[in-house]
Figure 1 (spheres, rainbow, N blue to C red):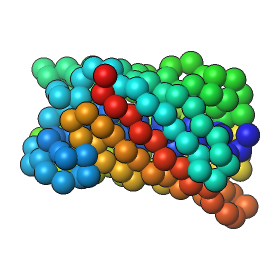
Figure 2 (tube, helix red, strand yellow):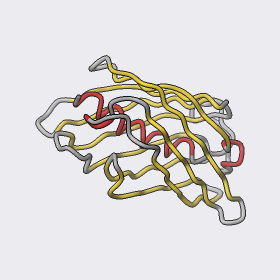
Figure 3 (tube, one colour):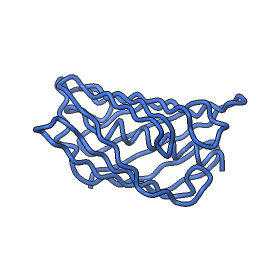
Length: 173
């Protein structure tokens, strides 16, 4: 259960950071000089895998960009036994963006406190803290997003020591 909850928490942060937007990129954090999330609006499907505990599940996301307000609304649906409970309901996040990237933060979500950054080249960094249920000190996420694919890696840092690792991949549909 602990391994699955870590995977789901990480997946949430990564999806938020990555899908909320970035400029043109090759999917490896290269390219792009201006942050423009318009190309990422739409539906995304994929899966997450906790490689330490061999747990996995499907995930989907919907990205809506408001060019006038310079905001992105990201709805994430993670399938599986999230945070030791049943399949959680979709989570909705909204953030603002500029021409240089996006910084997003949210506290008290079902997955904990999330801080994420996406730069104009599509490089993603994120951290989750205060994960509900205890036992997890933090989750660190890195990755990249391109026009049709997002690839992420994460490390879960347990309160009592030790780590778990995993990956997530989404494809724009």
